[in-house]
Image (cartoon, rainbow, N blue to C red; front, side, top):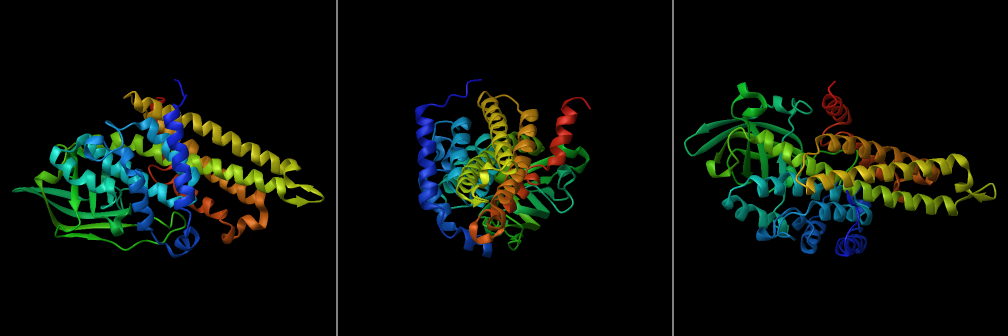
Length: 383
């Protein structure tokens, strides 16, 4: 493994940091308080080329083929530059669980129809997998797809879906043959105007408030055969192929946020005076800062390893599970340390320190809970 970045990659990361700092850090506090999604910022990201990182050049992407290493570094920079943790979360959700599966498994017609609109910011896409009774046990899903002349009839409900309330299209997974378990799951591209497809209201939540999350409902929704993604029963393969990329880049944004968080904490404890000296001179405070640095660098190594493995076309199931567990738990711990190091001011909403903790909590739940990651690791170790 060689984690040396090219000048081009580092320059692009720097340009993303500058773009995010100058263009995307307005009205975050008010949008967080009101659970408002900024479509304007989404379009700015598209114009800059963020969504293009997860799409081949032929369909509006940035490179001839998707460059996972460059994308990972870019999203790390995005997380550092943007103080809105919800925006990179939302971007990565569309890029790696909607655009990437269409790029890898879609027909030529599907790629031409959907990818340019998603990359340009004209459309927003959601990934419909989780259900009320199928979260961690996702392949016990109850949403069904019944084959009929010319396509399928979908019935069911998807729950806690990123972008569900405003999505123009959704990549939805349903069971075509419950007897086959995970091998009976199939993917479908459902468009907003299809009869029987309803988007639920935005659900208010603890953190990541600037990205809408809700339900997708299907009541005798007809989806034409041309909108099936891959073959019947290919849903499990599509999902597992995209999850490693998804975890890598969502967590890359969190890594960038952790680095920014550490720098801001160091600046604060250097200048905050108590008992005639900087609070950073107190061992309890400095030890918390040291722990933040340790979590950051350990997480960085796991992140780069997963990105490197995927760039080589290798499976990273174990490494991705370790990364998801390590980085998501670290962001929570470091966010709490940041608040404790800043004391009462860190607890106040107006200082925008406590928001990282609220946003970080979601990371131990979405894209596979910490408990599930531990189970995956144990199973891969033969337990």
